[in-house]
Length: 289
Image (tube, rainbow, N blue to C red; front, top):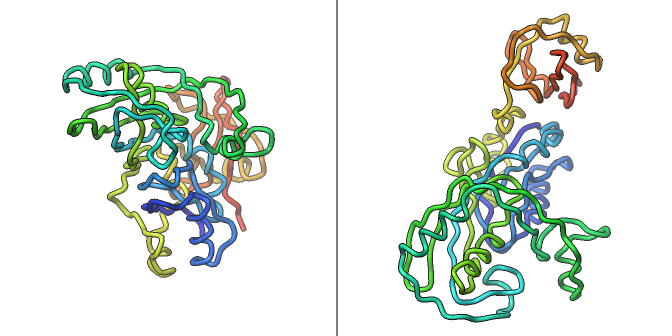
């Protein structure tokens, strides 16, 4: 049993709890998730099974699209509505003013990860330290907001659609937006709609689906890797790659880096790395067993 499931994560559970549930349902130990969603968050949570776990890091690095509901005028210690309110401030601005500030967020930004996050520091997730009242230094990270649009607005509530790079914390974006508008803001709900080219509407599964339904919805191991160029190798080169050897690759590619490797019969082998000398080095390969 190898491949990816596109789980429609329910609210109130951690990503790890979803994995435990699916592990029991499918009866398989080798299973994980690609990109953590907060307990408050719902939507697309890719699940890697068996050999697909070899590619979980690459799937996590894909761009994401979210739908987020915001409540203006308050800020919490967690950055969302589940936390304790730590500050209040009035909010009364026209839609156009809000749209102008949304436009200012687009592009490259530097963002400090929130303390209530799953990033590990000193052996424990940051939220572990935050719950103990310990706040640790976090280095800012470069992120990119590809697009951010206002869907709906009513008084001090708004719904946005956000397209962003990996590692972007929407809660932190929302707080930044509130402060930029000389007010405050927090997330009231969050739903992930897309990961890379995959959409929640297609081939998704639910946590309570039966084993038979889940097995039917497992996608191939290369389904989360379509961002990489595809190359095909003859059988001689396939043998070399499977033995861990680098091979020459004469075809021209615009971009060096990771590529998907296939046989001439379109059998997916795994990921390889093309360097400056057009040599393919095996990076992550599926087991031949």
